[in-house]
Length: 427
Image 1 (tube, rainbow, N blue to C red):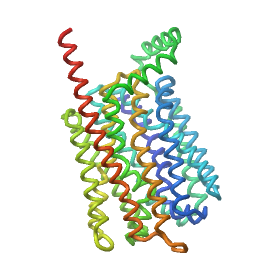
Image 2 (image 1 turned 90 degrees about the horizontal axis):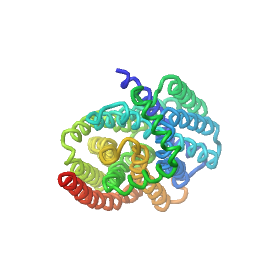
Image 3 (image 1 turned 60 degrees about the vertical axis):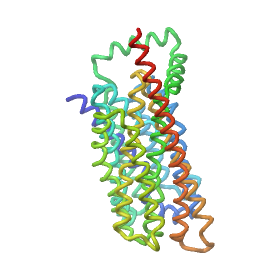
Image 4 (image 1 turned 90 degrees about the vertical axis):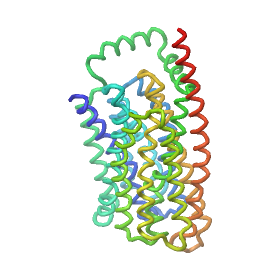
């Protein structure tokens, strides 16, 4: 029972982190008006946040293996709290970018810290399901940043809205500091002994070798490319460009668009456990599921982008429902990291995997912003539907490249595992 309590504390910290991360998604239009930013500058707010998040994953993974989840979650929470305070009073793009950078650094410390809690508190057979539950339940933060934030921005204003976000972050930090423990007490002695050995033999060298060993295993890179190819479409849609696309491009009312983003989150909550159960029962078919999710995403976007005129509401709902598989699909990457790395280097391996989807998301966010700017006439109130269509078409390049990499490292990983099994049989 205690393991579920520890997981719940970490999960709450992650929910709050996703709330901070996603808060710009529905505030994009308000941010453009407040900061006087065009679509390219607006995209830089998300890019700065995601670039820092992606760039910090591997360093944070190494620090996580050294300092543990509790310290990293507390430090991350404090940074995100500071970021929301700065964002609440930001009046120019430079200050706003600095605020999102703070949020990105804090956010980078959160998810993989919670995954380490799962790895150390739960038996291996439960890991695929618990990782999916973590990722999907964490999306409650995105849900709470959709309709509630729209209402707060409308009725309370910019500063009050993000001050409220900062207060929520402070509560999460207090809970982590007072209630969370890194691992069960039965493994604490072993942990101290391992720490003594590291100090005697050169802990930094061991950690560096562990990170290199994780990267050298094709299973870790299979996880990286799985995360890369599955996550970005849903992330870009939820984090920044989905709301403008639905309201300015497709002509939906703001409340309807916010509900669509909420549907994206709720759908992910339902799909996560199903995908986790599938991975637990059929681990050798995980890559087939990944490629199926990529194909379905590309097909749904094709239907929307090629529809003559504005797409009907039912088709947009179908698109959102298909995108609900993106988040759970990206979690399969972390299952690969756990499968092919021992617990003492799970932080670094998870950090490597987590880079993939956010690098892809950065590329798409920047590309969409630049393409929208180039296709929007000077003085126009917002980009046209045609501009949005051409901008979102950039996704096909990343789907194609990522799918090839998944197929490549699937084959390499299977050969590596077969060779290791043969060596064990001979021994």
